[in-house]
Image 1: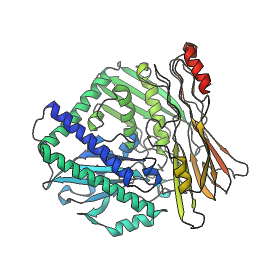
Image 2: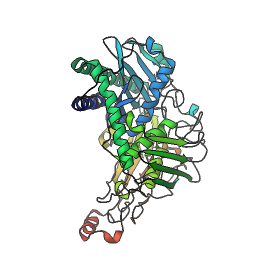
Image 3: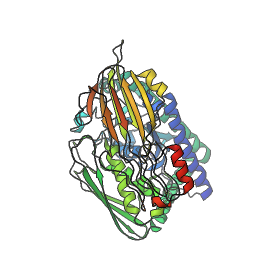
Image 4: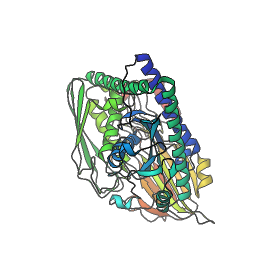
Length: 534
C-alpha cells in the first residue's frame, strides 16, 4: 500500500520539513563516507545520497555530485516496471547499475534503493550510489566490455540478504573485499535514511510530510519558471569542440536553446554514438541540463524534481549525447562536462553577467590496476583530478578544483602512498594556465606519479587540443596533457602500462578569463606576479 498527500500545509511547515529532507540526505551521505572502506569513497567522497517520493520523483539530493542524479532519476521507474509496489515490504533493498535496463549512467556507480514504510504504508525511497573503483583494465567498444551489468533486482528481501545475488556480483569484481565493505556502507546509509523519515512522519504526521514533499516540488517549479522568465526570450546557439584520448579527431557538439516566457527548450546535436566510453545515456544528459540551467536561472532552486518541469530536452537517439544500447558509457562524465560548456556558452549571449567563463571542461582521470608486491592481491585505484574554474564577472576563477558535474575530493598523498604501490612526486598548480582578463581564470593542476610496481594504467582527459574559452574579451585557459617518462610503451587510446620506476605526469586544463585583460587592476597584476599566475 502506498500513501498520497491529502492535506494542505502552510509555508513554514513546508520549509521546516524541506530542511529535514536536506538534513536526512546529508546525514546519509556522511554515514556512507564514514562507513566505507575504499579510498574512492572514504577519502574522495565519490558517492551521493537522495530521497524520492513513491513515484520516483526527487524530493532532495544531498550536495554531493550532480552527475549522480542521472543514476537516481532512472532507477525507481525501472524498479517499478519490474517489481509491483503491492509486492514490496519493509526491508526490501534493490540494487542496480545498468545504463539501459537499470537507470544508471555507467556501471561503476552501483545504486541501492530501499522503500520506506510508515505504519505499513509505503511513503518514499531512500537511495544512494557509490562509485566502485573496480571495473578496470577493460575495453570500451561497447557496454559488455565495461563491467557487470546489474538490472534492478532485490539484494535484500524483507531484510534477508539474497546471498546468491551478492556472491554473483562479488565474483565479477576484481577487488571483492572492498566491494562488499562499500556495499555494506551503502546499506547503512539507506537504513539511516529510512529511520529518519519514519521519525519525521511520527513527528509531523505522514500526510503532512507527504504534502510538504509535493509542495516543495511545486515551489522548485515556480522558482525555475521565474528564473527562466528573467532570461530574455530568444534562441541562442553554441558549438564547442570535444577531444578525448579515445578518438583521433575532435568532435563537434552543439545546442540550440529557446527561451519563451517561463519555459526553455534545449535541442542538442552530436555525432553518432561511437565505439568509445564517453557516450551519454539520456538520463545523464538530463542531469547535466538540470544542473547547468539551474546555475544560470537561479542557484537557490531546491534540488528536487519540480525544477525539471519547465524544461524540454531533446537529442537524437543513437548519438553521443543520447546513446542507445549497446554503446559504452564508462567515461560519460567527459562529454557531460562539455554539455555544461554548451549551455553556458549559449546562455552567456543572453545573460553574460550570470555565466562564468569556461572551466577546465574535463574530468582528468587515472585508473591504476595491478598486484600488490608480496601478497599478489589485486588492487584498483581511480584518481580524478581537478582543474581551473572559470572567471566570473566580478571575481577570479578558483584554482585546482573539481567543476560542474563532478565534485569529488582530493585524496591525500599519505593515503595514496600507504595503500597503493605508487609515489606522488609532484602535486602543484600549473603557473599561468588560467586565461587572462579583467578577472583571471583558475589554474589547472600537475600531478606526477611513479609506479613502484608494474601496473596497468588508463588515462582520460579533455581540452587536450581545444582550450577553455573566455567571456567578454577574456583569454583562453591552457589545455591539458600527459607526459610519460622515457621507456614507457606508447599508450593506445589512453590505455597502457607502467613498469616499476616509470613515471606519468598529468596536467589538467586551466579556465577562461572574463573581460579584457587591459582592464585588470594594477593591484591584481601585482598579486598575479607574486603568485606566478602569468
